[in-house]
Amino acid sequence: MKREVAAVLEFEVTEATRIEMKIAVANPGDAEVRESMRVIRNDDEISPREIVVEHGSRIHMLDCAPGKVTVEYSATVHGSFPATPVTDADLSMYLRPSRYAEADRFFGFAASRFGSPEPDAETLARIVEFVEQHLLYTPGASRGTDSATDTLLTGAGVCRDYAHLTIALLRAVNIPARLVSVYAPGCSPMDFHAVTEAYVDGAWHVVDPTRLAPRSSLVRIATGRDAADTAFLDNHGGSLTLKSSKVTAVVVGDLPVDDYASSVSLG
Image (cartoon, rainbow, N blue to C red; front, side):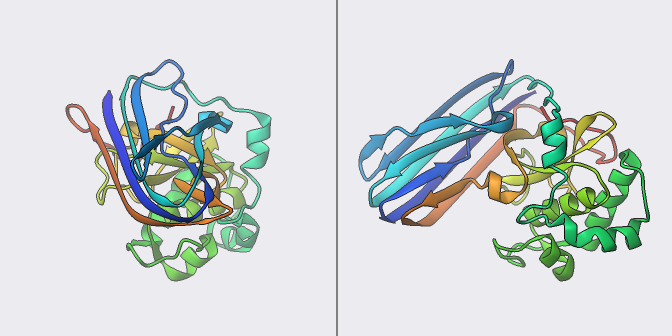
């Protein structure tokens, strides 16, 4: 499968700051990837530093003086990424509560709703079905600081809210789970997208209760405990205002069909 993805960010730095961006596709391994990134501050091109962290996630970091900044990233991805390795450290980390997926607050709810299930594919399917039926996809219904608890009570949100609730419930029934930010061909409205990876039956499987895009077309960007680890833009020590962002992601040829019931692994 050949996919073409791109992101354009425009923001105003009002006080010198360190910027971190997670918009580049994850370390591709054997996949064929052609990509480019340009960062322009006012009229000058500047070069960010690249840091590769867990699961091939790539952070592009730059120390930026005040001014208007435009970031243009594009990539053509052809072929499959290697299977994500499984480590004991991951299986431990992704069972723990985190900032936006506070699994420890869901133990009682998960027990009353799901009983004492086995950490298997059937339990995964039941939790995904619950999240899909309980939430209404509603842009603007949530805040960037909302956690899985807020989402459960509100009953509405966007992709990151769906992912956080799914992750918290999975961890509460002893299934390791993590958030993946992706480029998502077919997604509407088009934007950076968030999905969940769950560890069952000896492998990581991607699930998405929003059903906004076929899972086999997704392109991994960043992987982490929750949105705190995968945000597309962070700044430290100064201030900036995001003026606009535009994301595109398409499959060259026919978009695949997803029944959302079968098992899919994301490279």
